[in-house]
Image (cartoon, rainbow, N blue to C red):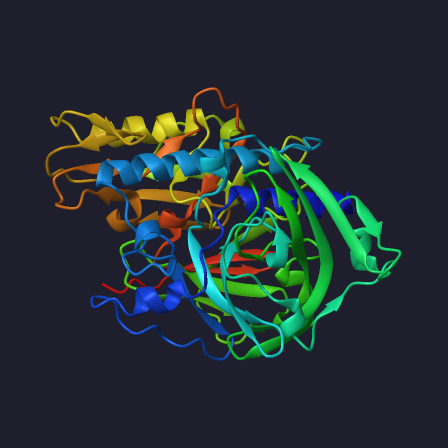
Length: 450
């Protein structure tokens, strides 16, 4: 059980894209069209979209070959992400989906900057609300991707976690080195086997230092699924960032996610209670004891225009035993709905846009090659309603000639039980996660820099 949390954490670290060298931050920010990178300050970290024009991952990661190619690649990434989230959600399902190396080694949706060690070594970390763990390739790692690793020998505050410590019990297949008396662990995933040392060091985020931060220091990898750099798990498991900083940030954070078209680090990740919005609409956070890391909320319906579309109650119902329900996820780009829910939304949208021929593009089945008036879509949660403006609902081509409904059903052949409210539908909202009070909040906030 507890060891499974770390196994699931690493699996997701490999399914989610993890990062190029931290030097790419400088390269992207120095591009003539990119503004200077804003500094992190206080308890607020700047957030960048991994596919934006000033992505810290560099131009190759930020640019798709075409708009249609970008949509196709991203919907393929989302399909892999949905498979993994579904494997987390279903009680007793202890596997992660197998995908090609191309699918496993994708880039994350959003990244922040952090520093690890003394003196601090700069890292980029993927922001992941559905993950518990922290994973960082360390120098000397045999078979790890050739990026700038963390060098434990250069940090005076680094220490290996000793055998017998509580954190060691949370690891997958833990082992104890007779020579060093330190905790190690190993696991296999897809075509890869990984060996790591459970480690602790000082992690600096914005102006705060988290001492004795526990993470997996990768030492050996075979196969193609090793993560190239860092992950910031914002789930609720024992090794998540949220759990390790509960005395500092009180289990509370919020973010405002910028559009993928945004320049540089224009979004923010705000840690702790200080500075959170006082006037914000909230809905209860639901607890799934089998999969505590996922942020479930109660979605009661979806409205298109003024009409509540006919969705079978079972398609939205929260069921901890099966994992069914609705989750908020920062790592999926476009909202994925179970088939009956998506069909009801799609059909009503098409009904309201009459007279224009419908086409498909890049995994989206409701596209128009002419200017149309899109109806608003409202997610109805327990106690609140969140109406999406067109920028959160529709994705437009570069020249504005084609537009598509930015939602999808589960991929063919996938019997998923999850509705995933994804990052595009959360963009330019302040989304508050208040774990101690069991609530999630939404408030409009413009954080996309044009």
